[in-house]
Image 1: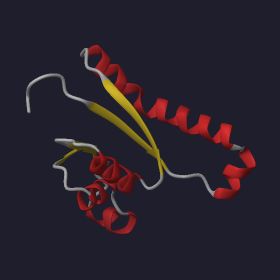
Image 2: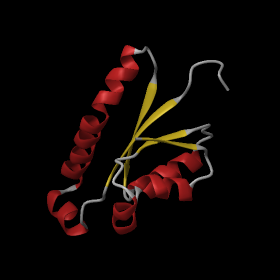
Image 3: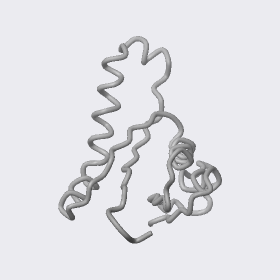
Image 4: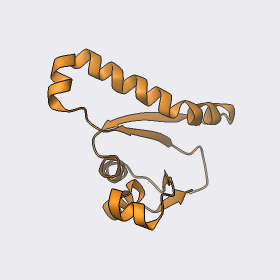
Length: 115
């Protein structure tokens, strides 16, 4: 488990654009938008991993973040999923839902939630 280099997947999930907006913009524009947003979201983590000399794989997904992260975790043979928590609190989680809760409910891979 601790031998060798870990395989790190940096996963970013963007909610899907509404169908009428996506079709009006065109596939190339939508794909570029998703790529640019993923690049911005992962820039800090990528810098830290590169500074530590660690390799990583960048994963761009579209859809419900909790469901997509859980699905990605199921497809790989991962030892651990690490998810950030915004710490909205119990009331906000009841009203808004929680990506971390969806990941916990949707996959069997051990999950570490970081505040």
